Image (cartoon, rainbow, N blue to C red; front, top):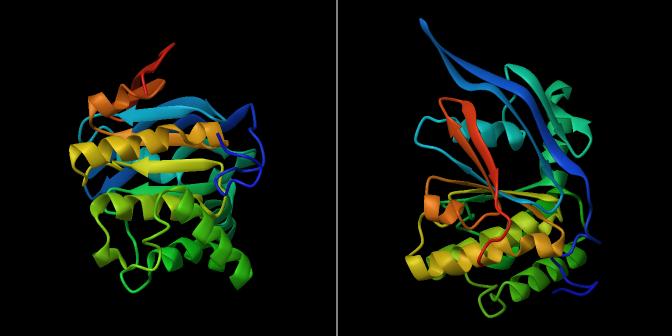
Length: 246
Protein backbone atom coordinates (compact mmCIF):
# COMPACT_ATOMS: atom_id res chain seq x y z
CA UNK A 1 0.00 0.00 0.00
CA UNK A 2 1.10 3.58 -0.63
CA UNK A 3 1.47 6.38 1.87
CA UNK A 4 0.31 9.96 1.42
CA UNK A 5 3.37 10.80 -0.70
CA UNK A 6 2.90 7.95 -3.15
CA UNK A 7 2.94 9.44 -6.69
CA UNK A 8 0.13 7.13 -7.75
CA UNK A 9 -2.21 8.17 -4.97
CA UNK A 10 -4.91 10.68 -5.93
CA UNK A 11 -5.39 12.08 -2.44
CA UNK A 12 -7.67 9.42 -1.01
CA UNK A 13 -10.18 6.87 -2.18
CA UNK A 14 -13.46 8.28 -3.49
CA UNK A 15 -16.79 6.51 -3.43
CA UNK A 16 -19.94 6.61 -5.53
CA UNK A 17 -20.50 6.58 -9.27
CA UNK A 18 -17.60 7.74 -11.45
CA UNK A 19 -19.17 7.24 -14.88
CA UNK A 20 -22.57 6.45 -16.26
CA UNK A 21 -23.59 5.45 -19.78
CA UNK A 22 -27.27 6.09 -20.46
CA UNK A 23 -28.81 4.51 -23.56
CA UNK A 24 -25.76 5.17 -25.71
CA UNK A 25 -26.24 4.80 -29.45
CA UNK A 26 -23.50 5.32 -32.03
CA UNK A 27 -24.33 5.10 -35.71
CA UNK A 28 -21.75 5.33 -38.49
CA UNK A 29 -23.04 6.40 -41.90
CA UNK A 30 -21.29 4.21 -44.50
CA UNK A 31 -22.98 5.71 -47.51
CA UNK A 32 -25.98 3.55 -48.33
CA UNK A 33 -25.54 1.57 -45.09
CA UNK A 34 -25.79 2.69 -41.48
CA UNK A 35 -23.78 0.73 -38.93
CA UNK A 36 -25.13 0.77 -35.38
CA UNK A 37 -21.87 0.29 -33.46
CA UNK A 38 -23.53 0.93 -30.08
CA UNK A 39 -27.15 0.03 -29.54
CA UNK A 40 -28.78 1.32 -26.34
CA UNK A 41 -25.81 0.69 -24.04
CA UNK A 42 -26.35 1.52 -20.36
CA UNK A 43 -24.28 0.84 -17.23
CA UNK A 44 -22.50 2.68 -14.43
CA UNK A 45 -19.06 2.22 -12.87
CA UNK A 46 -18.12 3.28 -9.36
CA UNK A 47 -14.88 4.82 -8.15
CA UNK A 48 -12.29 2.12 -7.51
CA UNK A 49 -13.84 -0.58 -9.70
CA UNK A 50 -11.96 -2.81 -12.12
CA UNK A 51 -14.16 -3.63 -15.11
CA UNK A 52 -13.28 -5.69 -18.17
CA UNK A 53 -15.10 -4.96 -21.43
CA UNK A 54 -15.07 -8.05 -23.65
CA UNK A 55 -16.46 -9.02 -27.02
CA UNK A 56 -15.47 -10.29 -30.41
CA UNK A 57 -14.28 -8.10 -33.28
CA UNK A 58 -17.10 -5.79 -34.31
CA UNK A 59 -18.90 -6.06 -30.98
CA UNK A 60 -18.54 -2.33 -30.25
CA UNK A 61 -15.63 -2.41 -27.77
CA UNK A 62 -13.49 0.16 -29.60
CA UNK A 63 -16.42 2.49 -30.21
CA UNK A 64 -17.44 2.30 -26.56
CA UNK A 65 -13.87 3.04 -25.47
CA UNK A 66 -13.79 6.11 -27.74
CA UNK A 67 -17.03 7.43 -26.26
CA UNK A 68 -16.01 6.74 -22.64
CA UNK A 69 -12.63 8.34 -23.33
CA UNK A 70 -14.33 11.48 -24.71
CA UNK A 71 -12.62 10.90 -28.06
CA UNK A 72 -15.98 10.56 -29.85
CA UNK A 73 -19.56 11.54 -29.17
CA UNK A 74 -22.57 9.24 -29.15
CA UNK A 75 -25.26 9.71 -31.80
CA UNK A 76 -27.78 9.70 -28.97
CA UNK A 77 -27.86 8.95 -25.28
CA UNK A 78 -25.85 10.47 -22.44
CA UNK A 79 -22.42 9.92 -20.96
CA UNK A 80 -21.74 11.36 -17.51
CA UNK A 81 -18.15 11.35 -16.22
CA UNK A 82 -17.42 12.48 -12.67
CA UNK A 83 -20.56 14.60 -12.64
CA UNK A 84 -20.13 16.17 -16.11
CA UNK A 85 -22.61 15.43 -18.90
CA UNK A 86 -19.96 15.11 -21.60
CA UNK A 87 -22.24 14.56 -24.59
CA UNK A 88 -23.29 18.22 -24.59
CA UNK A 89 -19.90 19.84 -23.93
CA UNK A 90 -17.87 21.82 -26.50
CA UNK A 91 -14.69 20.28 -27.87
CA UNK A 92 -12.29 22.42 -25.84
CA UNK A 93 -14.03 21.42 -22.60
CA UNK A 94 -13.90 17.76 -23.62
CA UNK A 95 -10.18 18.15 -24.22
CA UNK A 96 -9.76 19.49 -20.69
CA UNK A 97 -11.74 16.55 -19.30
CA UNK A 98 -9.56 14.07 -21.17
CA UNK A 99 -6.38 15.61 -19.77
CA UNK A 100 -7.67 15.86 -16.20
CA UNK A 101 -9.99 12.89 -15.76
CA UNK A 102 -8.76 10.12 -18.07
CA UNK A 103 -5.50 8.24 -18.57
CA UNK A 104 -5.04 6.04 -21.65
CA UNK A 105 -2.94 2.89 -22.05
CA UNK A 106 -2.74 1.36 -25.53
CA UNK A 107 -1.53 -1.97 -26.91
CA UNK A 108 1.13 -0.22 -28.99
CA UNK A 109 2.33 2.04 -26.14
CA UNK A 110 2.20 5.29 -28.20
CA UNK A 111 5.39 6.62 -26.61
CA UNK A 112 7.10 9.44 -28.50
CA UNK A 113 10.32 8.03 -29.94
CA UNK A 114 12.29 11.28 -29.65
CA UNK A 115 11.58 11.64 -25.91
CA UNK A 116 13.11 9.69 -23.04
CA UNK A 117 10.90 7.71 -20.68
CA UNK A 118 10.85 10.52 -18.13
CA UNK A 119 10.09 13.11 -20.82
CA UNK A 120 7.20 10.96 -22.10
CA UNK A 121 5.74 10.81 -18.59
CA UNK A 122 6.17 14.57 -18.16
CA UNK A 123 4.30 15.37 -21.37
CA UNK A 124 0.70 15.42 -20.05
CA UNK A 125 1.85 17.56 -17.13
CA UNK A 126 3.44 20.02 -19.57
CA UNK A 127 0.09 20.43 -21.33
CA UNK A 128 -1.55 21.06 -17.96
CA UNK A 129 0.84 23.95 -17.38
CA UNK A 130 2.60 22.38 -14.40
CA UNK A 131 6.00 23.88 -13.57
CA UNK A 132 9.01 22.07 -15.03
CA UNK A 133 10.52 21.15 -11.67
CA UNK A 134 7.27 19.72 -10.31
CA UNK A 135 6.46 17.70 -13.42
CA UNK A 136 10.02 16.31 -13.57
CA UNK A 137 9.92 15.26 -9.92
CA UNK A 138 6.53 13.64 -10.33
CA UNK A 139 7.60 11.77 -13.48
CA UNK A 140 10.70 10.45 -11.73
CA UNK A 141 8.66 9.34 -8.73
CA UNK A 142 6.17 7.51 -10.95
CA UNK A 143 8.86 5.69 -12.92
CA UNK A 144 10.64 4.68 -9.74
CA UNK A 145 7.35 3.44 -8.29
CA UNK A 146 6.81 1.31 -11.40
CA UNK A 147 10.32 -0.15 -11.35
CA UNK A 148 11.88 2.00 -14.07
CA UNK A 149 14.13 4.16 -11.93
CA UNK A 150 17.21 2.93 -13.77
CA UNK A 151 15.65 3.32 -17.23
CA UNK A 152 14.05 6.75 -17.02
CA UNK A 153 16.59 8.43 -19.32
CA UNK A 154 16.38 5.70 -21.96
CA UNK A 155 14.44 6.22 -25.19
CA UNK A 156 11.59 3.90 -26.22
CA UNK A 157 13.79 1.98 -28.67
CA UNK A 158 16.09 1.15 -25.74
CA UNK A 159 13.27 -0.32 -23.62
CA UNK A 160 11.75 -3.78 -23.66
CA UNK A 161 8.06 -4.24 -24.37
CA UNK A 162 7.24 -4.52 -20.69
CA UNK A 163 9.30 -1.44 -19.86
CA UNK A 164 7.56 0.53 -22.61
CA UNK A 165 4.16 -0.44 -21.23
CA UNK A 166 5.17 0.51 -17.69
CA UNK A 167 6.34 3.87 -19.00
CA UNK A 168 3.00 4.24 -20.80
CA UNK A 169 1.13 3.41 -17.58
CA UNK A 170 3.23 5.99 -15.71
CA UNK A 171 2.34 8.58 -18.37
CA UNK A 172 -1.36 7.69 -18.06
CA UNK A 173 -1.17 8.17 -14.30
CA UNK A 174 0.92 11.35 -14.37
CA UNK A 175 -2.01 13.75 -14.45
CA UNK A 176 -3.60 11.96 -11.47
CA UNK A 177 -6.78 11.17 -13.43
CA UNK A 178 -9.35 9.03 -11.59
CA UNK A 179 -10.13 6.86 -14.65
CA UNK A 180 -7.66 4.66 -16.54
CA UNK A 181 -8.76 3.21 -19.90
CA UNK A 182 -6.57 0.32 -21.04
CA UNK A 183 -7.04 -1.01 -24.58
CA UNK A 184 -5.54 -4.53 -24.94
CA UNK A 185 -2.61 -3.42 -22.73
CA UNK A 186 -0.89 -6.82 -22.73
CA UNK A 187 -1.48 -7.59 -26.41
CA UNK A 188 2.13 -6.98 -27.51
CA UNK A 189 3.78 -8.58 -24.47
CA UNK A 190 5.00 -12.10 -23.82
CA UNK A 191 3.01 -14.14 -21.31
CA UNK A 192 5.27 -13.49 -18.31
CA UNK A 193 5.58 -9.74 -18.93
CA UNK A 194 1.88 -9.52 -19.71
CA UNK A 195 1.04 -11.18 -16.39
CA UNK A 196 3.25 -8.71 -14.52
CA UNK A 197 1.66 -5.76 -16.32
CA UNK A 198 -1.84 -7.06 -15.65
CA UNK A 199 -1.06 -7.49 -11.95
CA UNK A 200 0.12 -3.87 -11.83
CA UNK A 201 -3.06 -2.64 -13.51
CA UNK A 202 -5.30 -4.70 -11.25
CA UNK A 203 -3.64 -3.16 -8.19
CA UNK A 204 -4.47 0.43 -9.16
CA UNK A 205 -7.83 0.59 -7.30
CA UNK A 206 -5.83 0.22 -4.06
CA UNK A 207 -4.36 3.59 -4.99
CA UNK A 208 -7.68 5.31 -5.68
CA UNK A 209 -7.89 4.62 -9.43
CA UNK A 210 -10.66 3.11 -11.53
CA UNK A 211 -9.68 0.73 -14.32
CA UNK A 212 -11.67 -0.04 -17.45
CA UNK A 213 -9.89 -2.81 -19.36
CA UNK A 214 -10.87 -3.62 -22.95
CA UNK A 215 -9.77 -7.08 -24.06
CA UNK A 216 -10.72 -9.99 -26.28
CA UNK A 217 -8.84 -12.39 -23.96
CA UNK A 218 -11.31 -14.15 -21.70
CA UNK A 219 -8.54 -15.30 -19.34
CA UNK A 220 -7.55 -11.68 -18.74
CA UNK A 221 -11.18 -10.65 -18.34
CA UNK A 222 -11.65 -13.39 -15.75
CA UNK A 223 -9.11 -11.62 -13.52
CA UNK A 224 -11.36 -8.58 -13.25
CA UNK A 225 -14.03 -8.46 -10.51
CA UNK A 226 -16.60 -7.35 -13.09
CA UNK A 227 -17.04 -8.15 -16.79
CA UNK A 228 -19.32 -6.41 -19.27
CA UNK A 229 -19.78 -8.43 -22.46
CA UNK A 230 -20.74 -6.71 -25.73
CA UNK A 231 -22.20 -8.28 -28.86
CA UNK A 232 -23.43 -6.41 -31.93
CA UNK A 233 -23.26 -3.14 -30.01
CA UNK A 234 -25.43 -4.35 -27.15
CA UNK A 235 -24.62 -5.28 -23.56
CA UNK A 236 -25.17 -9.04 -23.43
CA UNK A 237 -24.18 -9.51 -19.80
CA UNK A 238 -22.80 -7.60 -16.82
CA UNK A 239 -21.33 -10.00 -14.26
CA UNK A 240 -19.67 -9.38 -10.90
CA UNK A 241 -17.49 -11.90 -9.10
CA UNK A 242 -17.35 -12.16 -5.34
CA UNK A 243 -13.65 -13.06 -5.29
CA UNK A 244 -10.82 -12.80 -7.78
CA UNK A 245 -7.44 -14.50 -7.52
CA UNK A 246 -4.68 -11.96 -8.16
